[in-house]
Structure formats: structure tokens, C-alpha cells
Image (tube, protein in one colour):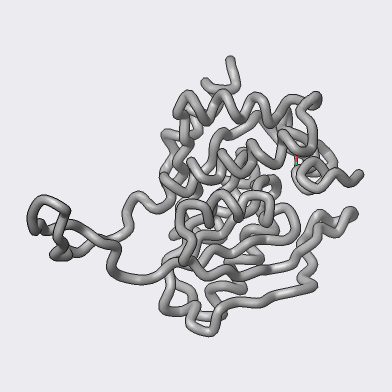
Length: 221
Ligand code: URA
């Protein structure tokens, strides 16, 4: 089965949206390729996150607005309803934040710092900063990799404790294990991704995956 076939099978399940646009598939392949440079990886991650943001904001509410074109008055449409907050799970989340902000520059941004304990693979929090009015905003949580799902669940637990209601999770790649665990913990959260890969390995890496997203984004090892 091709990777695309794996993705499309997963796409049919409940609250997971796999964005299978040809540009996304092309850019994701370049992103996965181990020979892609740090600069290339960063640029591709930004472009892919912009395309994912387009999908994540599909249901934003609109209201009519009267404007004048250079030719005549007309009724246009403008965004209404709740404002957005992007929440980046540090550090790799920052690699897909800029593409989202390219599309919605007025969004507020929260950060949740979690690292994976290498033994237990469980998230340990070291930082959290959210806008005061988080309860009045729709939240889009960003992290490039949905692997075990532990970090995503922990971040969403904290957001809900802070009053956030409507939450979408956006990632570049997901593992079936991560989808199962996030969906079990937070069945109300929609997951938007470029692909669902085969499996997790014993170290919690997604296979075939793209390696360590943070290291590839920031040129560390
Ligand atoms: N985090 C990564 O950066 N890569 C993986 O494959 C899994 C988790």
C-alpha cells in the first residue's frame, strides 16, 4: 500500500481530516526526504502549515459588511464570531506557527512547553503562557508530529483547564497510535494532518515519518 493509501484509509475515520491536495503531497515528500536542507525543511514546513491552516479555518463564521468598490457599493463578507488563538507546543510547534500566522496575522499566540521523558515517553511541562481571554477564542493547537498523542493530550488538558472550548489540532504527520490516544482523551477535538503514517517505533518515532521535526527545523541533533 502506498503512503497515500494509508492516509486515505485513515481519513475515513471520524474527526480526522487528511489534506490530500497534490501540493501538500509533493511538499510533504520533499519534507520527509533526508537530503532536504535545514533551510528547505523550514520553508516547506511553513508552506505546509499555511495550507493546513486554510483547512483548519474552513468553518470560521462570516457576517455581511457594506463596502464601496471603486465602481459601486456592495455587500461583502467579513469574519465574525470568536477570534483565534494558535497554541504552539514547544519547540517544534514554532516551526509550523509562522505559516499559520501568514494566513491569520491577527491571531493571538499561546505557548505550551512540553518535553518527552525519554524513558516513559510521557510529557513533562516546563512552560505555559496563554492569552488572558483564551476562553473567548477558538484554539488551533500546532505540533508537527502526532506520535504517541501524549503531548497533544496534555496540552489540550491544560487549554481546557484554562477555559478554552473549541479546539482543533493541526500537525504535519500523525501515527495511528497518536490519533487513537488523542481521540480517546479528547473526542471533541478535530485533527487536521497532511498524512497518517504506518506506525510508531519503539522510541516513539513515526515510521516512515520525517525524523525528529525539532532537530530538522532548528538544525540540532
Ligand atoms: N517527534 C518527532 O519529531 N518525530 C517523530 O517521529 C515523533 C515525534
